[in-house]
Structure formats: structure tokens, C-alpha cells
Length: 305
Ligand code: 13P
Image: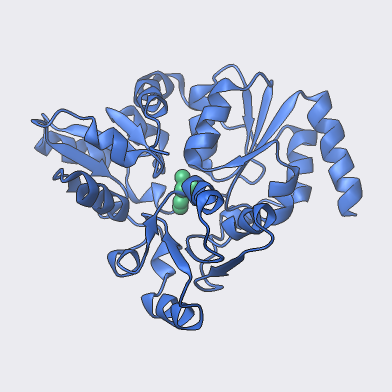
């Protein structure tokens, strides 16, 4: 069954001149058939540079929207139209307009996990991979509004020493990380390195040796000599970690730390998506032209290696 499906996907991918992009949180089978698997920054870079006619985005809505903004001449497909991001939905354009009216001179930095309308009202976008570098490059005399992830924002404040006004959004999957479960895993694996995503809350981040985006976690493990890692992010990343490092051990914090939206895309849905050219993600032209500058500024800032 799976073999037939993969052959069908491969045939359709060739016929449509499509590229399949998958986020590190996708199920293993989907990651395995993708042309590129990566973090939000890497996926945006791929989407902006691809020569394909069709981008099948195996991720969540804000990621496909970002691809549609960056590549207006491509058809961007999201194989499951209900794959949203609750963190991105924690701020609306109306709410940001209200905040901006109280801080008219502030710069707005929006995490890429935000709706296109919010990006259109922002000066800069960032991902967890380059938020620190981006904020550090901003003029010292300007107030900064950082939306919508408070935990990433606090991490950036700690590293850069810049004060920012934080929107109180959070990722419900990272919020499920329990510090006691990390302590328990550490008691069983005292030499393990703890890697945590900046979207985790402070009680988890305090236990971490490294705070990294998903792409940075993959790079960090390649360079590290450690044998065992406790991985405080969505569990899908462990698929690629194991694939790239079969001799090392990776421990998820919990089997609850799974993003239900990321897991909605299956091989069947990827095949249907290519067959029926569904679901096309389009961004209104006015919103698109207003958000492209903030996204291009995001792509200009490379994370520290
Ligand atoms: P990364 O950019 O680290 O892949 O994070 C994406 C994300 O949405 C985390 O919840």
C-alpha cells in the first residue's frame, strides 16, 4: 500500500513539476518522501528559491501562507486545510492594530507563526532560528513589540538584553512540557544533553543545556560528541534525529508533546493533494505586498552557526 502510494506521489510530483516541503514535526513517512525537510527558516528559504511550479507544503497554514507570499508565481498546496497553528491564531490584525495605536513609534517583530494579516502590519518577521540575531540588529532607541510568542520573546530578551513588549501567546504543544519529566529522564540518563525549543516555558528552559530551533538541534547533534539527548520540542523531530544519528539515543520529554495539527498530513493526503491540486493557499494581493518586506528582512538574517 505504502509502496504504491509513494510511486503515485513520485509520478504526480514529476508530472506537476512539484516540490514537497515538510516541517521537522511531520510524521516520519511524510518526512521520508519530502524533497526537503527543515525548520521554518529553511522551509521559507526553499519556498522562495524553488524552480518548481507547485509547492506541496507539509506543515501548517502559516507556513503555506508564507510560501505563497514569497513565491506568488507558484501554486502552493496544503494537503490538509484544517492544519492550523493555535499559536499563530492567538493574535489577530485587529488586536495588533490596537496595540500599535498605543505604541505608534514602536517596531513590530512578528514570529513567523502568525497570520498573514499580522505579518502585513509588521516591520520584521523572524523564526526561532534567527529571532536573536534579528532583534540584536534593531536600532537601540526604538521600542519593540514582539508578537505572538511570549516564550520566544522572553528568550530573545534574555540573550540580547533588549526590553520588548511581549504578546501573551504560546504554543499549546510546548506548554505540555513538564520539567519534572525532564528531571526524571535526567535521573535515568545523567549524561544526556537537554535541548529545548525557545517556545518552551521558563521552567523547562532553565533545565536546558541548549536552546535551539528544530533545525539548530539537528546541526548541534552533528557537532556534539554526546551519546544521549533529551529533546524538548514536538516529538516529530526525533524521526530525523534518529535517521541521521542511528547510533545515538534521543528521548522525548513525553508522548503528549505531539502537535495534532502537524500530524494531520498523511501520505494519502499528499497524493490526493497532488492529484486534485487541493488545497490551494492564496494570500490576498494587498496583504501579500504589505507582508513581503517583513519576510524578506527575515530571510536576510542568518542564524549563528
Ligand atoms: P522551528 O522553526 O524551530 O522549526 O519551529 C517551528 C514551530 O512552529 C515550533 O512550534
